[in-house]
Every structure is written in C-alpha cells, then in structure tokens.
Amino acid sequence: MDAVVLDGRGGIALETRPVPAPGPGEVLIAPGATGICGTDLHLIEGTYAAGRYPLVPGHEFAGTIAAVGSDVSALRDGDLVAADPNLSCGECRLCRMDAPNLCERIAALGINLPGSCAAYVLVPARVVVPLSPALDATTGALVEPLSCVLNAVKRAPGWQDAVMVVIGAGCIGLLATTVAIHLGAAEVHVVEPHALRRDRALALGARSAATAATELDLADRVDLVLDASGHPGAIASAIPLLRKRGRFIQMGVAHPEATIPVSPYAIYAKEVTYLGANSCGSSFPAAAEMMVDLADRVRPLVTHTFPLARYADAVAAMRAPDAVKVQVA
Ligand SMILES: [Zn+2]
Ligand SMILES: [Zn+2]
Image (cartoon, rainbow, N blue to C red; front, top):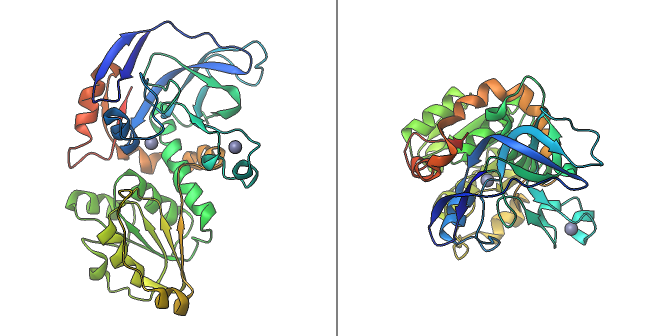
C-alpha cells in the first residue's frame, strides 16, 4: 500500500508498505479523509517531542472498516468510522481522573504509531467510534478537532448564556465559535488579525470580530475567554476582559518558553480561573454525536483537499491565508 512517511528532518516520502493484518482487538480502516494540523507541521520538522520516526502521520481521520480482528464483533466491513488517536493505558492516576489525554503511558496514532496517511491504518477497536450515516469522511475527520473543543467544554462547563471571546479564528477557534453558538452562548466575539478569518467567524454567527481584544470594549464583561491562538500578546490583552468568576481556557499552543504578565491582584479580586485544555480527553464519542448537528455548518471549514500522493502540497497549502482545514483524501 502507499504510505506517507516522515523522517523528522523535514523529509516527506511516499513509500510502498505491506498492508497490515488486524490481530485480536484490532480493525483495519481505509481512511477516506485525514486532516492536517499544527501538530503535523511539528512532526515533519521533528520538533514534536513524542514523534517517533520513520513515521506515517495522520491522527484526524475517518474512513471505512476494511477488515476486523477475529474477536471484533461490533464493527463490520464497510462501516463508516472515526477513531480517537490517543491510546491511553486506562489504569494510571490521570486515566482514573478521566484525563486519558494526559496518560502517563500514552501512545498515539500518527505521532508514535503509524497514522492514517496511508491506504490503510491499523487501529485498536476500543478507540473506534461508528459515525452516523448522515456524515461522510470529510466531516468525520473533523470529529477529532471537535472533540478537542468538547474537552474544553468539559474543563470549563457552562457555555450556555455565556458571554464568550474566542482568540484566533483558525480551525479550532471557528469550531469553538460554532460549538458555543450551538450550546446557547449569549454572545460570541472573535479576535483575529486576518480579515478572511474574521469574515468566517461572522458567517458562523459570531456577534463581532475584531483585530485585537482591546477593540472589543468588553472589559470586565466576559464569562469565558477561549484562546485558540497560542499568541502571548493576544492572550495577555484578553485576560482583563474577564468579569468576576470569569474563566480563561488555554487551548492554543504557545511557544514553550513564552510567558505573559498577569496581575495576581486581579485573579484574587475577581476570583478568575485560568485553565488548560489539551487534546480530546474522553470527549471523542460525544463529538461524533454532536457532529451530526454541526456537519453542514463546519463542512466549509475544509478549504483544501489533496490526494495522498500530494501530501507535501497539502502541507504547503496550510500556509495560504484562506486555508482553514486542509485534508488529504
Ligand atoms: Zn491535530
Ligand atoms: Zn494512563
């Protein structure tokens, strides 16, 4: 079978590999679509600590079951499915805290195990989630980023009736905007420097979209700020928007050495909370379910689709200003 293979030094090759055979508890999936995200860019360059090479990338995917292991009865050939790429141990302290994304012995498809940028990918049946027939591989491959947003909802619940600010209108920021409106947020405001992306946020129902948090005129009025930018300056300027008991959700991946100035007095006086939300947690099945309601709204977020053999072109397309989600299919 064809497989994209990364060497962790910027190299991207198309190789021929044997089709794996599912063992007990495993299924073979023929991916129909795989999304590329910032993590993949780090994996290509070898700047993602968990990457193991040579690596077949691809951790955001949906496809059809091509074969099942001897003891797998709940899934059948041809079923449309997605899969949580994170394989947790289920036993460590963090797994027992319902934080499988932080598992002490985590492995992940497309990170340190072969991923979906190949004709077939081998997946443990326990992480496979059947998709509604109302979905397809394109929207199915968006279940993984949606599950990351639902993990943020789980970390900081109560989006209904909230006044929210989302920083960054890339794929995660736009999905967060969509989820907030779906869950009944009172107002969603978006901070994003690129005009094309601000327009997308407004089209999805954002109340306003500004180039900087300071333009929003929302000081001390915001219940929830969700950062999907990782940009220290944007993060710092949005913290003063929080009202008393406001919560700041850090989803964006900042540079590991970046820091921001915070006012300990403001944290004390307003009793604000600053918390992190990282990867999908245990929200993958819930995201597969919610995708049925959101599919028509989020399908336009897939702006570019390339065949597998053009993986390098797909990666280059991510840098286009109009790109939101690039998929290989
Ligand atoms: Zn990703
Ligand atoms: Zn664990």
